[in-house]
Image (cartoon, rainbow, N blue to C red; front, side, top):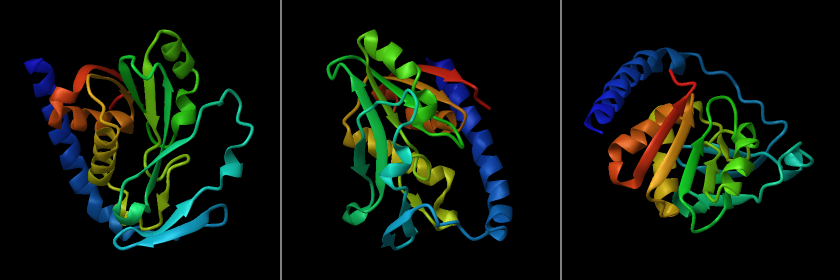
Length: 194
């Protein structure tokens, strides 16, 4: 476990240095946001206008018959994160973290297999993706904010003994949260990770 913790910390330090090196160049290349296919639901100080994709955009998706759940993460309950919570409510928790630029739809084939095995499967849509809200202020779409939002999500659901499966950016976010909250995690599986 100590070796895993060391590798996670080493990886996070490397990622942190990449993020800080590219942050300035990203801030200089900001383009307008296309708002045609979304509803404006709020304006939050520091986050800007919040867009929400209409539910009708998710009608009739192939192999996607999951209950829609939401948690609110920011002040005044205005920033909404979508998540799937399927399976045995008393089963071991598997937290599936998607990558960029996907959303939980990408995990739809895994969920039934895991729930049939008796697990409780939880899959959040990262802020800015899928059914979760989309702040228009591009400067708030940072690694640190994604970590903060997912960590708050985990704590609001009171999850523990988590079996984390993460891939792509979901790995960068999930592994940092696991390193900062080791007591909440039982096992970690990583795929398609940098």
